[in-house]
Length: 117
Image 1 (tube, rainbow, N blue to C red):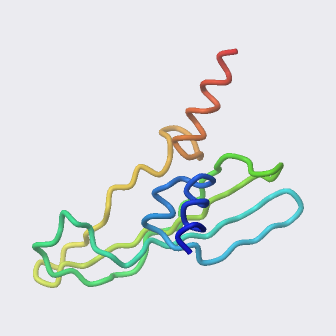
Image 2: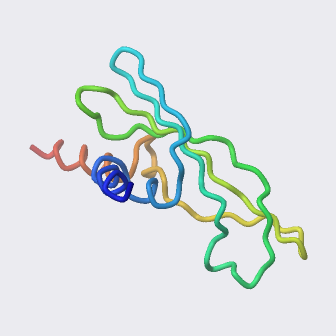
């Protein structure tokens, strides 16, 4: 299983494999959709608080690098937690999308680089 995880880190953004679970996928024609949910592990910087899982944010859809001729869309659901004492909603601050695009940061940087030639 570890080899499988390491292979996925080479194909997909590493943070997805480390912090999210692939819950389903679909492929129709040349379009692939991968669905991820953030794991239920509270942010490390919030260890002093007593947090409980409190659902998910609205799903974000991000275009990623094409794989083997297929357009790839990542559907990512970020988790949120509730502080039992203060009733404050807590979440991680993920930088999932390159600013001004609907693509991963890595893919946007790649396209920016190749457009210079």
